Image (cartoon, rainbow, N blue to C red; front, side, top):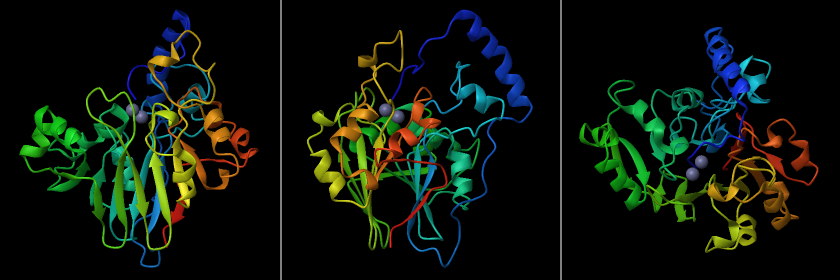
Length: 311
Ligand SMILES: [Zn+2]
Ligand SMILES: [Zn+2]
């Protein structure tokens, strides 16, 4: 996604937030990271690890002084990293999406550098983290970055991303179907505004279990695939749940940032909830603090640190 996903704040609240947040951040209340949840582990086997569940802007969200952002900013609640999925065999680690939280997410996988990054699209929550592979940070060498042809062109033609390519920090490769040596990762197109690049979701097929990753989509009815059939065909489906309901952003035209509502997604997938993990939650989404609203209907809300075996 792009654009400011804020429900609108009065001037005084905004100023209070602007004054308060840097103070809290300086006190170390923001951005604490959990211990590595994956990492080298010979007994581990292939698995996916949830490394973040928030919409592109993260939580606490810039400029927001309401809960749960306020609670997270003062350390009264865990901050939520931007939505990201790790894939590991216990030794190597790949990321699905390169978020602004990439350093912490790589650390959580217990590796120094990712063995590869699968990109969904060119909205800030999904590719900005590539910058940390560059000279100013990791100084990586040849990290495979799997993308569509259009996304690859965007990276090659636009600074600062083009520098990563020219300096050999990243190696842009086709993301249609990638064999990780025991797990296959395949991309499929999804409709999603597509200003700078096209957008894909991923299907991850492990030795025994399969996972779907669709953090952003405009509308299920605009997809050329049948949602129920696709979800029925995997063990776990991580699905765009940016917004819970239509009244979440008073004063904002939600048609400008189209996403299926979580309420609608759960209706469409009635009976399949046990395999659905709602993810990519906007900071306004009540499911952040009240996952029971989805669990009561048999669905899950994704949480950082969740590990799902692929074998
Ligand atoms: Zn997006
Ligand atoms: Zn997004």
